[in-house]
Image (tube, rainbow, N blue to C red):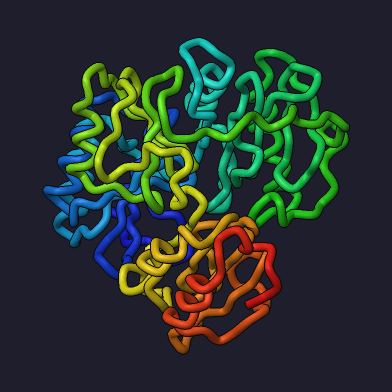
Length: 386
């Protein structure tokens, strides 16, 4: 068994991360999909070995929370028996792959993702957080999601290979997609890349430095019926095991797909709402991001989610409540962001990410609530700084 993952690294099943509520174990479903039986088994493991809470990550993964050392070892053994974790810890660590969740059997996304998974041993040793994105549907859906080495639908209708942080990519011949991804990853390492591709400013090799742009972003997914089944929102990306069990018990349910948008898709299910999940596409919680906060995260300075729930109806745009300046729940700028401070109060900023210079500070949670509650939502977030 491997040791615990230190904070700031990416945990997986072999290397859990210590959190304030116990160990956090990450499961990486292949192509972000679990059969109904496998999803029910994961739910059972969350109750048997953890605290019954399951997180939905921005990489299309699931995380079991609240495990102790014995529970982690038992859960790992069960996941290995289920075939949900690679027996080789290095192979499991390499399997950082985000796919467009709407893929269908035999389409480009599935074809390329499966081909890449079969060739992971050809990759160089990459930084722990480095990842691949396969966004090869009719139109991209993952342009705003982090990932270093990307295959996307291009504006010309074909597929392109693009390095994160670069606006343009290079057109790919059919069947050459995985060769291109591996070549780009090797160049990254050989050119001194040590963190994320978006922060690696070495000039791209001539073969990759072309002028092909991704196609326009497809409309955002929302809760409700879809071609695959039923889309459910998970508030703040968390679902209790009994709630997940209820969703999987819906008539016709066949499988579970995990998206990077805090949405879960139950394949084959009808349009029924499930208590504990979001079915209304207008629910204000869909516009709000919040990390677990204190005490669940040892790095968070403040509780976050109760405050976020209270603020959601008062904010017209997007809101991020972060327990510290790391901003793990949302790395993008939001209309309003509250960043927890070491003194237990908050910094407020607009059109910014967590940790940005505040337009007002310091604020207690009650002061934030009082000011937001006194301002009609129609005036937020475009009103002058509070």
